[in-house]
Length: 348
Image (cartoon, rainbow, N blue to C red):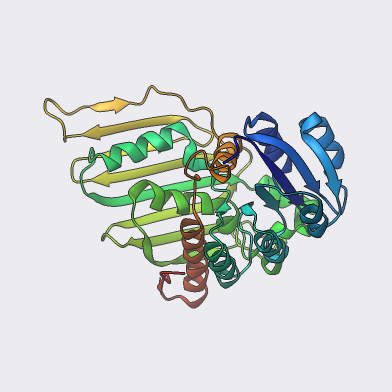
């Protein structure tokens, strides 16, 4: 396998987090060069500024990318409703895909892409970048090594700003349209912690219930608030509040209780992490995590994805986990709409 690969960035005027992806690729030692497909031309100058000599070509269509180049990974950041056919073109060309979430407006569309990726032995990864934040990895280690014992329950909240929803430009964008985004706060921002709930505990969410709505009354047709109840396959229960409520910034906490202790983690905005365990000998006490909180965000996650596609390590997420998280969110939307709890479909 090559130590370095070409990465194709496929985006358009509605692409999200493009500058963060450029920064990650610029810093990625395993990214040899970058080919940009941007039919609207919105992000071309930014690419030239941020990627410099790594940017080797700019084209208008995915077909041009694959006719002229052989990328080792395609990074797709598209409006959710428009993403599936672009991802499919990448897979048809035999290229691993890293996609901005949610990459679909129906779980069935992503399931079809997963089936194709698996048949071709290709990676299909969603951008759940919080997975590699150092305190998240430490929390996962504590749980895996039994420091908390059997997991009993989980409580989370991830709250961001309501300010963005008051911007007229936001009202016109795809994030504010259910038909274009698949949903609102939960599928765009809250989905990160849905993934982390399963990633940290090593358990699948199998049933969901709750409420979703537009509590801020802004002119959008998606939810800005969700209250989620979750049941996991190991019998654990959990609750999750996700919403746009603040004037600025974030408030976020993950609290997990087990038979031998608990942990409380905030690594998004606020930075605090402590845990308590009775598993080891001696007097139990609260331990404050004194390790790093950086690097975090998209740069280390994209770098790990590139390394995974180059065969240098395991990818930071697989297609099964990506699909499972999407199925969980869409099952919750159905539960909120019908007023009845919903089983999360398992398997592909």
